[in-house]
Image (cartoon, rainbow, N blue to C red):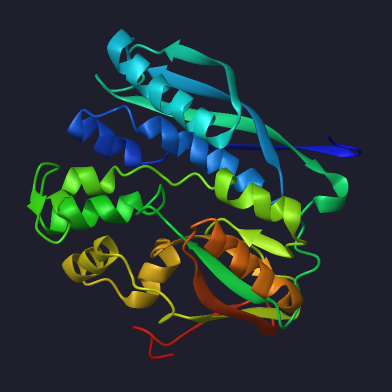
Length: 289
C-alpha cells in the first residue's frame, strides 16, 4: 500500500522499572514496556510498526522467567500489529546479580513519505490534544523507588487504599501501546506533530498547556505527597496522566475530536501552540506560574 515507503527505527530499554519486577518476582508485563518504548517512539513520526526484536541478558538462564518476559513482548507486539521476528538471550554469569536481567529491543516501521510527521508544520494556533497514559509508564523510576522504598519504607506488597491494589501492582502497570489508537488518525488526518511524553518544538513556538485540563491520576498525587516533590519537578519527570500528545491544525481539530470520540478514545484539551521560543508553559491546576 506504500508508494514511497520510508523506514523508521527505534530502540530502547525499560530502565530501573526492572528493579520493581525483580522485587515482585513478576516478569510477564515488563516485556510490554520494552515494546511500547520503541513502537510509541516511531509512531510519533507517523510510522506503522513492522517488526520487533528483543535482547535479554541474564546472569543465568531461568527458562520459566525468560518465557514470562517473552510472553509480555509477544502480546505487546500482537497488540501493536507488528511481528516478533526473533531476539537474543545472553547468559553473562557474574555480570548481573543473581536473579536479575536486562531487556532492551528495537523495532522497524514504515511510513508513506508524504505522511511522515517531522514537526516542521507545527505553528502557532495548533491545538494540543492529549491521550491518557496507563500510569507511570517507564520513566522516573529512580525517583519512584527513592520515594516508595526509602522515604516511605514500603514494599511491593503494601496495600494502598487509594490505589485499590498493592503498590507493586500499580507501579508495574505496563506502558500503554498507542499504535491502534493513533495509526488511523495518521492515515486520515494531516497531523502536524505527535509527542510521546517528550518532544521538540520548532523555533519561535511555545506549547501553552492548561494543567487543569485533566485529572492527575492518584498514583502521581501520592508520589508527590509521599516525597514532598515540587509540582514542577513532578511534571518534568513523569507523564502525569498524559502519555501521547497530538498537535493538530485548528481547521482539522473538530474532525480529530469527532474521530476520537466515535472510536471511544478519551482525550484531553491540553492547550495550544503559541508564538515563543521552544518552551512548554504550564498554567492552572496545581501550578501557580
